[in-house]
Amino acid sequence: MRELTVVISGFDHYDDVTVNPAVEVPKALAEQGLGNLLGPDDTSEQVSVTIHAVSIPVSFAKAWPTLLEAIEATHPNIVIATGLKHAAHSVMLERCATNLMDTAKPDADNMIPQREPIDANGPAAYWTRLPLRAILKDFTDDGVPASLSSDAGTFVCNSLFYNLLNWASTQDHVLAGFVSFPMVGPAHSAQHTLPLDQQIAAGRDVVRETVRYYLKPSSSDILID
Image: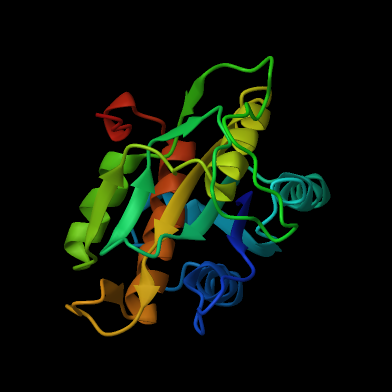
């Protein structure tokens, strides 16, 4: 049986957020694994998947080093970073990481970078390599509201996403991407929330479809437009 390792991260604290899906979803996936969602004919049945969760500070300076430390300790095949989008009304699949830090609000270290590149020598942007088309199909089958997002903004989420894809571009056959969760709350709420169990199901779909794509990559599974 082939063994695959997945690291899934989430930011550890948001002001005025009691239940943080970027903490709870990675934690649940690490504890529960992929469950019984793989069918008997699924090629992923031939694989043992170990999921590691890691909490990341909302810090431009510390977010990527914290995730990189976990990566170097576990040598994953797949890395999925997650965050919280307060204004999101569904799970957001992030397509692009841009080489820009630009914010009016401070991070956890009270840093407020404005119009600064993440990597002065890096490309302007990276595209995700998660199988977004397959993930969206699973979301539809499971009744999980979801949409594509053009980018992860210009705050710490994007900075982490960019650094992750910059690192992944130098690795042999490692998949990486970013998923943004909405606030936790009742379904169909005017406050743009989703129940935690739906968000955990969404996280499981992301991991499962990325494992499938890792085993049998297909360009048709990648959706960036």
